[in-house]
Image (cartoon, rainbow, N blue to C red; front, side, top):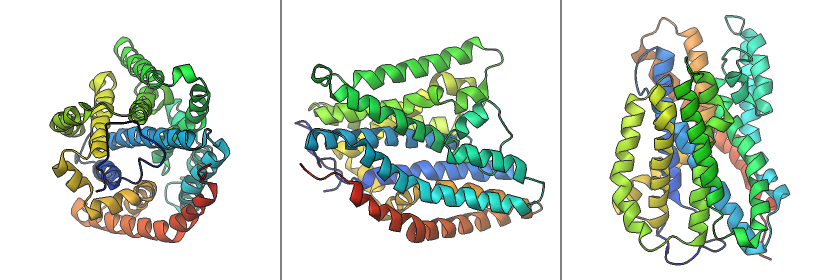
Length: 369
């Protein structure tokens, strides 16, 4: 059954497989982000901490990338970085370049003379340093503001696989390799908390957008994958099942009460969200508790998870454009229009742009040696 795996011995190549529960978790993450942006564009409070859905994405990304690379290493005795980067490019570039192109074309004719700033951020987006564009206040936020999180992920993709290849080459380091990302995560979380506490006023933009200050989420996912690759101990499944309710409660509280300007977010909120997300990923891996797995594997959620990348890219553009031309509309009138257009554009992007190109990834998938 999907999501149910043996946790009593080390994982081997292909053992992770496709877990629909991870797509379900992605769906919940993107839905919280969309809910947050519904409120942000309406100047209303909807889900103040919904932006934490990005943190959940970071943990999932760190886990999946590491798990797949380790499986490739166990299968073939090596990792093809060329093939890895080709697969990432096929998955990420088409929709991103299309969204950036639409943004530039739209702002060429948009009200408010938006083109100049958008062109600057477009360059930051396609070269994946948009998070630093905002962290260092290079320019004003534009219709491409949301691409900051994609920049952090791409920077992670550039650095972490190289470190992992080097570490896997040291046989003596393999058994406790999970300590490397765990130490990095602890350093990032501690550095962020200290910077927030000792700075007055706290450099909120720098803490929120910096790669170093958001790296703990990705690295916690990496550490989980490396532990998983060694084989979860027998007691892990019941422990993770017992932690399910506290993890869900923590995420609910954080997403309801946290804000981007709250000091608590940078001291404990981001770290708490990452740890809770890791618990839920662990639940998917062990297939327990079954009620949670059934919810996460609901076909509707799984589909939303599959299109979550496109939905993340396109919904923000749609919300921005609709706001430009419906400033006098009520929230009840505008939001259904925003959501309908965003969903339609996402589905078209997925089936006509993303999926046909993603299918070419098989050419860059290393086969068993």
